[in-house]
Image 1: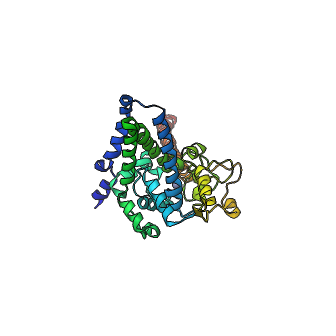
Image 2: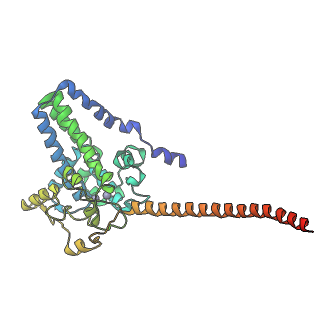
Length: 336
Ligand SMILES: [Zn+2]
Ligand SMILES: [Zn+2]
């Protein structure tokens, strides 16, 4: 039993092979060459698919931060699925799990288990392959979403074929595959770096989430991760005008077009709650735990050394007494 569990923690190489091959195929672009068309498609596919992931997979399906009609809901799911990050129900259910157990032993991708684990190993191992339907019952009732979740490979495969038909191998490699790889790692930074690198505005108490403007730029707003952990149901993650949150602006446009409604934003009360005072340095739960452990280890080291010193002084004193005693006895016998 224990052995089986340990095995499921390891990378399932057959499962990881397609992803590995996509990475390895990228240098072929040096042979095919690429121009402006490929570069523009690469950037466009990155931005558009990042929007579907952040606004759709994350803020809509995982957190229900706003409402969509059924056709728009399906469109959002299809758009997110083209990013080749597995099915919408699989993704959203695992993300809900992350919020339930953030940075504890049960967190599926906490960086406390190492950078690579949180970045990508967690989903390449056997352990988290299946969709946790009990976490996503609300959306699992839609048969079209269950179908898409099962056949998630279809939309990215079709997109790849379309790129190849219109622009040949260079378009497939740079326009489609390179943007997909960048999209993978851009998204994965939220699970890895966003719990390690950045500042904390809110004492989220149970996790190490951080706000990071660089990560927010490359993920269209997801880098305001400490804000997000603080108010998880908010469609807006950059809480102030200077916190750029492109996905939120796009959701806002959808609401003006009446395609999205009930767009949730943080209340004044939520913005004031658990706020870290100016000048307070909050290094997060993991850093505090390490500091506590370092203090304990330093205390143990001090006690051990103190004990050694006491013993050394004691034995030196005994040795001195042993040296003095015979001398005293000798001088006593001389006097008599
Ligand atoms: Zn998180
Ligand atoms: Zn979330």
